[in-house]
Length: 402
Image (cartoon, rainbow, N blue to C red):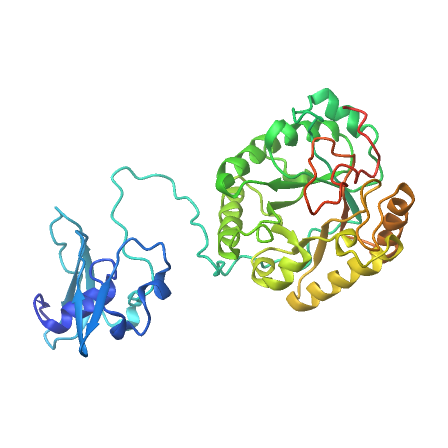
């Protein structure tokens, strides 16, 4: 049966435009939604319309893009399409086959447009998740990384300079009794230095990608330090309290997807999650659902209504609430109490209250808790909401390697 090429019929033009939304933009009346609602405010192609005396005037914007040819059989029924790029000859029509032969479904209107063929093919890179819509394979883990207790560590001197390999080793000579060490980023060669400092032990690392604008670079820094032995890695976080700081959940979800893809290309298949405050996690459960577990920083001190000896009850209450809302394991990635600083309501910093809070938390949570932090962070600066306590959360006091 011979195929007929349909070129100029009005109905086909409408079909072509629907298949290629970047080729011609339809007014919102025909789509049921505005352009911003369909593809987001960052879309490059705009549509302008104004109403005057009941009439709609539409200015069309077109760009030079690929054309779509629709092939139909002798009965006028479409059976195949082809994309023709500028300066490319139309392809020979494919033989007509029944729909049941596995022809691809028609492209959805709000899906991505056909991509131009690359001039210099490159290895495929994982695409970031669309804001608010993590890929189906994301967030599949519900049990979490699994450990009893951990402690966080930062490799900085009081003057903000990086600690040397020897200084890091000295710091870790005093750290014991924890199954996991949490790091926040990849600067100062910290991944390699901490790996060296914990070599020969059963300690695993809860690593971190800190800058969402440098996801690929930081993920590759981690991979280069690990050198293929992912057995030392408990989990990897992407961002720390980013939604709490004002970053959109969609941006964070996209970064999670990007990190997971880069790390998988380097052989890592373990848990990946973003870390945020307990309040941000409750307000935006989608960031937890896009993660492989819920990772929350939870500090009773900043509530102002909780005395040190009730810290465990406070933290466990949030863990239970988030776990129930998301159906996932909750890992407390920061919790503790300052030993110095100013009073915040019922929360009073002191060495005694520091010990009472840590004891209370340990009694309430038997696993998946990371204490903040190993040593006092003398490089930090206080702000209006830190009550003069920002530098004094160290479980072990001042670092010996300073």
